[in-house]
Image 1 (cartoon, one colour):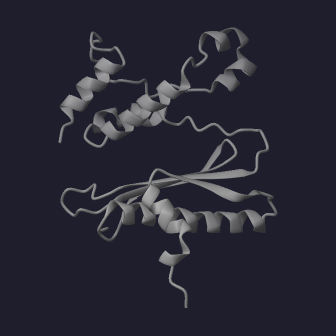
Image 2 (image 1 turned 90 degrees about the vertical axis):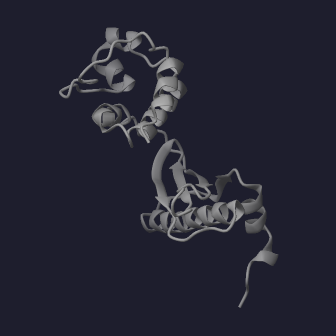
Image 3 (image 1 turned 60 degrees about the horizontal axis):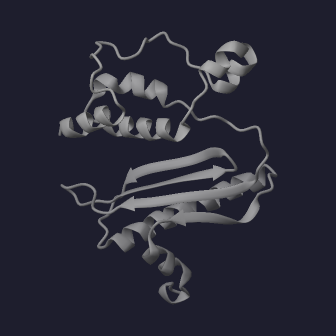
Length: 194
């Protein structure tokens, strides 16, 4: 429940095993800015503070977000550092969705945790992670439900975009790591017709 092993592995992975603990991990009055903001306002600092490896940073923040469930003392710092969704100024009307399910993730109820995220170009516009209300009998069923929920969100989002007269490129790409769910969705034999 305390995730001690996970925490120690994370500290070791980022090379902070010799670091000294601090009572307050982040100054509550700190104002973080983006690299783009720094380039416009402070040209000399921008090159020094540029983010070297964005993927590693995002991976670390993701692991810390998982850790805050049992470590509320680090919540403020992790929440502050995870506010890095940058809005792109590029006009790209390609919609891409990603979905996944963690079958029987809850050890007590055996319910599945489903999740998706939807991007328009480089912009993240919709995301959700939720414990499903019913129990799935297989991982394929759980993944298919995740896919169905993602498609429902896409239909709503595309409707909203059409109402505001925004052109989007069709068809929409949906990425899933479940071959079974993709086969079920692609095969009309599995779909009832009235």
